[in-house]
Image (cartoon, rainbow over all chains, first blue to last red; front, side, top):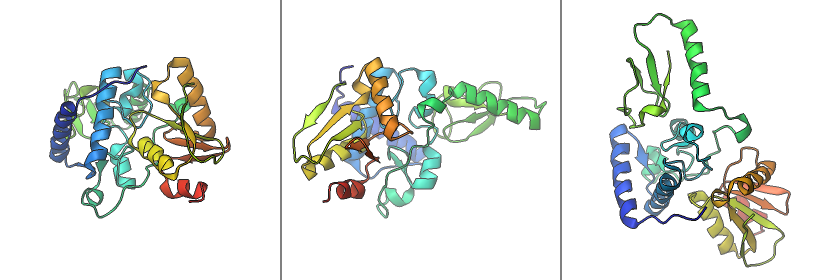
Length: 175
Length: 93
């Protein structure tokens, strides 16, 4: 596989858009501009070679349904920010790090290893059956955004999560 | 497997498994260069199917989570992630 080149202009545009979405959703991006730009270059490279913005710090399989959990922002971001102050690649950080009061330290990998990884679809089915035994007979299904936990009751999940802007395919049926 | 070699002081077999897009992998590579250590590295994401699988088997042998960067020293000690202090200590600097 040959390396892909990304222009500085493309990085500028993606950076501005990520910062805007982050601010609107209550998230912060690393204050280290050069580091952020390198990660965004990686995201854009992955978008070109795989067709989706897989995490630049994880090995993508190239099959979207196997990689949905690591499409940025990944399923693990919020928990890692909570526990370690930063997401796995450290693009998203907490307020303390964003304001330079604390430095980022390595974040351990939360994603299960290759051998223990089911597809996100398989995991969603488990969630449905667990929820269904507790709450049945609701007039509408409840959908959960795997990225930020946003819940909504409607026939289908929304096209874009109103909180974190994750796309429709990041929703799982919760109840 | 495609190995890139970086010249420097010989401190044993130093192998860095990295991703071409990963910020922490880049920092690890920069630190090894700064320390002047001779090492080999490979960008696992740029390897093709079978080669990539073989490389992942190697990574998982030392780091079961299969994450990057994984630095393997003398085929026995591994340092996972950009752990600057640990890397400096491993090379006595």
